[in-house]
Length: 216
Image 1 (spheres, one colour):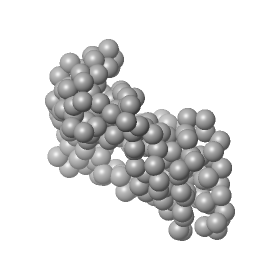
Image 2: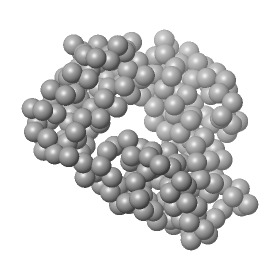
Image 3: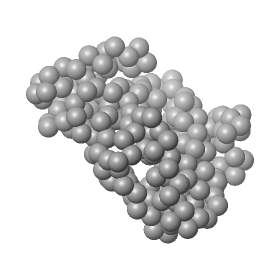
């Protein structure tokens, strides 16, 4: 697929997704790498735009340079924004009570600790949907159970083999001190995300280095 064809396909996908206001989004492409520039009205739209671009066949990476620009009526005082984020986190049963948040000029930093990556992801997903949030830094520390490197690698390898969406033979796993490095190739961004999710689900994982290539 040429760069022009990829730009056209990504632009069509952004237009097709009703969750995205794509009027102020510019798309460029170079050898499979798609760059999004422009402005959107919320952090949720910024992330949905990246998800939409990633779905397009031929996209190997998305550089999301979109800026969130809130209307004056959507701007929030730091204390009010922090309060709304904390309220939203508290109402979500997947987010542990050990998670806290700070807010400054629309930028939210999630702090505290959680046992599992899915809890960190859930906290971030909740905060993204709070009105007035411009961007999020997820500094939640993982404090889950420890496991040996061999146990972690074995558990992830088995999870890859169980997953019908993944070609386990095309992926390798390396582990050291709770850090997992994933290498290999997958056939789509959906497979890529499945592999990362499987790796994060293993006990003892504190960090995942993503060296997986999407190859069409």
